[in-house]
Image 1 (spheres, rainbow, N blue to C red):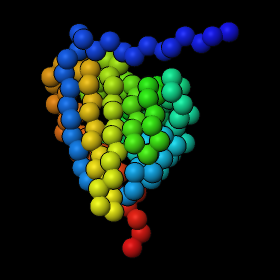
Image 2: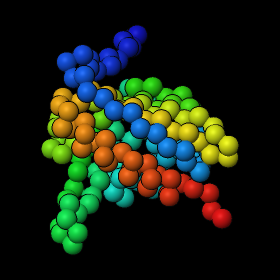
Image 3: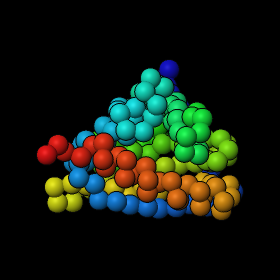
Amino acid sequence: MSQEPFRKPDLTSRPFRLTTGRTLAAAPGVLYLAWTEQFDRWFAAPGSVRMTPEESAPFFFETEYAPEPGGPVARHPHYGRFLRLERDRLVELTWVTGAGGTEGAETVVTVELAPEGDGTRLTLTHAGFASEEARDRTADAWPLVLEQLDRQTAPAG
């Protein structure tokens, strides 16, 4: 039985995209693992990750945070599937969240990893937003997420 290739999302009706980058202290292999097998160590709520790093495999995880300091913690589910994986070089996945995120649109996140000195230059492109507002909110969030990734994966010492 032959398996038909999986389809990538058609983003032509959702043209809004963003690109951001950061040089991180960790090696590309460490960051690749963080994006594929260790999401709950730096981003997702512990115990919420259902993820197998294989092309076309679906994933689910939740993040938790208080929108207001001292306020109640809110859960934010994230869904998607892996599109392309190139060990220690690239992770591409679909990314779907609700209100305040992708607003239900199936977007595509591409994470490119390139050695830079003792660390890694990470370039993240997030494409397929249905509105400028969703893109702009997310553009404000990704640098904070990458800063957190850097803190959690930086070599000790």
